Length: 213
Image (cartoon, rainbow, N blue to C red; front, top):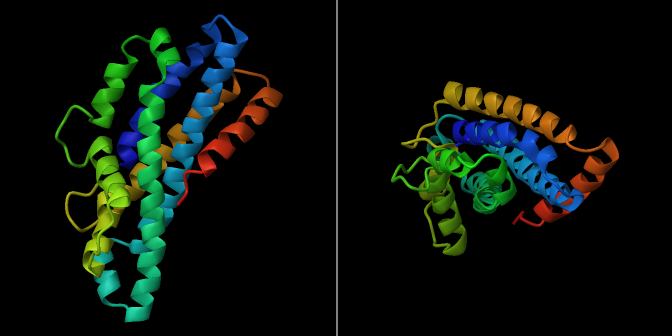
């Protein structure tokens, strides 16, 4: 998941600088607001996702199995909350990036490249589309899972094909995503004055904070 998100950020960042070419101030404002909402959703994804991965370690199922019943309930409740939040964020992100018509005007090929990264036209289970669909479905149609099944969703969120996490790979992907987000934010900050960006950041944060479970 984190690798694909980093690729998505780079694509959006490459097109975002063209927002200055939009004709009207209102168009530029709405575009920057959309970019900031996307940035905050992505930042929340990586921040909470990193905490979850580090907490769960390479073998989430084994960690739960080695805990007492009370400890397992507490841990899984904490993990479930993050996984629900991640599902809502990925669903919302898909709407933002595919609804970025202003960026498509600047870069007509952008949506096709985004589709390749997100994987919405492929059957790859570990694509962003596949992961988002799995987590969102779990949110919309909750069922009584065993502890093992609940713990398995940590690996689903991280984009692992099996139940184990390759911690070196995942941590590296998280680091790359953080770097890409820093560059993306730098691009946004150059699109308007500092005062305007800060004001729009507050609006974007209010909009994205409502996505938490």
